[in-house]
Each structure stands twice: as C-alpha cells, then as structure tokens.
Image (cartoon, rainbow, N blue to C red; front, top):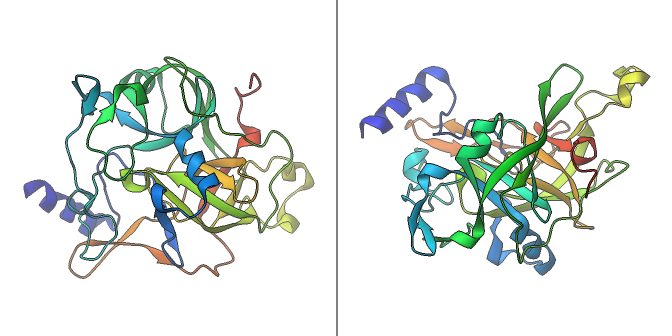
Length: 301
C-alpha cells in the first residue's frame, strides 16, 4: 500500500507515470490494436512471434526443476491501472523486447543493453505469453557478449540498437528475416510484436509508416537526407516494447526496431492511470522505429 501511495505521489507531482523498470514511453493511436498471440488471425504472423523474446532480470527467475518460476506482479496493481484498463489481470515481467536474427544472435534497442553488466545480469525469455505460470529453462537464454551497440540522439538523427550473442544456439525457433538494403515506403502497413508494459507477448497491427525522421524533406539539407536512421509510425506500443521487431505486414520482413514513443499513460481524476490515446489520423506520429539497415553487427547473417 505504501509503495502504491508513493507511486501516486510521483505521478501527481511529475505529471508522468513512473512504472517499475519500464521507463521508455509509447502510446495508443485510434483503437487498441493489441492481440494475444494465440488469437491473432494470421498464422504467418503468429509464427513470427515464436522468435521474439522478453528481457528479464535474472534475479527474478527462480530455478524449479526443468522450469523457472517468477513472482506474479499484476499489471493493474503495479501500474495503478484505472478500472477497465486492458490486461490488468496479467502479470508483468519483461522490461524490454528482442528478436532472433541468427542461430544465437538477437537484436534489441541500445538503451535496453547499455553495458556488459546488463548483458550478464539479464536473461532472454521466449514464449512468455498469456497464461504462462512457469517458464521452461530451454526457453531462457543468457547474453554471452555484445556484438555491436549504439545509443545516440541528436536533432538530426537517432541511433538506438544492440546486437548480442546469446549463450547458446536457439533450437526450434526460426531467425527472422530483416531488410538488408533500401528503405520501407511511407504508407506501408506494419505490425509489431513485443511486451508492452512488460505484459505477456502481444501482436499489434493497424499501423503505417508515417514519415522518415521527423523533418520534412524540403527542410533537410541534401547531405542529411542520406542519414535517415529512423521512421515514425502510429504503432500501439508501450514501455517494454523497446527492442520489438516492426514488420512489414505484407512481407513479414523486419523493417526496424521500436525505440521511442509518446507518453504511455495519462492520470485520471481518480489518480489512476489510463492508456494515452491519440487520433489515428494524426499526420505526425511519435513512435520511432530505428531502421534495421542502419544497425551494425549483422553482416555475418
């Protein structure tokens, strides 16, 4: 109770939501397009979810025979949800998302893995979906080393990616195909898979590529046009989605890495939190997706 009270005070005076370990912010545009993996209508997209993992602090996983157990933290209580907020009864666990691109190679956001300490103290969990009560050890992997990483944000560019080697090869899960040259077109339909607010894996569609970077081409010097590292999209994502693969809905190819966005939750009059909702028709979107063609460390794949 005291912890919830202090969280409420933090929200009241700061005007932002301070959720345990999940600090990057995203938003809902138009309708909430998040699906449970098992209920998504396309089997092709459901299969892609098998290669998406959540980053979990190793100390949260307790060994129990062939499985790991974890302490249940209901999202509604941990994030002080208002009545009626979706997924309040589900447990939060991952703090970021990553995805498999090689037998033992995983990609995530650079701000998720900032050091060798982060590499060694976090685990990558595949198959954390609705109804998971224990996690099979065969689905949990350590980070062996950071292959490449960058985290830089300026007026004209954004770099935010990490490529890591897992402690062993991942069996039974197919590495995702990703764009290796060129760039996605504005207006392309997108789908994202990840762990919004640390929830069990969700698939969200109904989004499009809005813009390349945040400036209009007419205002950009020609030299800088070649350095467009990200695009914006109206994706329904939250903190915990950082590092999520953003797919071209038509091809199933990864176009980029979800790295930034607008505010997750807004405070209601009752000092509880509701999802921040913005119009789907907005010309400018705050969800930023780092173009995977700009990530280093993938040449061997």
